[in-house]
Length: 114
Length: 113
Image (cartoon, rainbow over all chains, first blue to last red; front, top):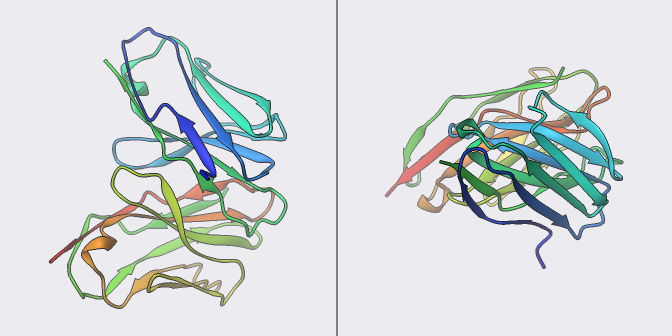
């Protein structure tokens, strides 16, 4: 069983379009995250949700809007896509209580904006 | 805030060579430390972790020791294989008021036969 799954794995779209990436975890974790990995492999946190509530919102354009319908799902919606949004986006989950527990990552969504 | 600094790559080694990837951190309190590995085209997988000072994490021949006095968590392997070629990320979690993972910039390792 896949612990953290995200769809789609690849997404190619034109500038100006709106797109969504979905993420689901079956680990029973209470916190989910979105990370962006740039072409140099640098990982930067974008959002974090704990029990469906936003708790971290780093400096991210407001074209990016996370939505958490329940604590097992955290979707990422992107409006008016720009060339600079091209990257790999990773969803992750963890249990907040017990800081020695690791985060589990999805396989990533490679977004290419043309 | 928390931060992680790891050695710049890329690192290229011959098979069976000894590997060290340096990692140092800045954090308040007592964070947990992790090494993640990303194989080509895949997501991140936990390689090993240590949750308190002097703990040693180990997995698949890799080791790292949590050194509070030097704020370091260097990754080592005695004999690398071609299949170890990947990007390695040092990360920390915890410390005062911070439960999110903070990553280093990653070190790309290439092992040649």
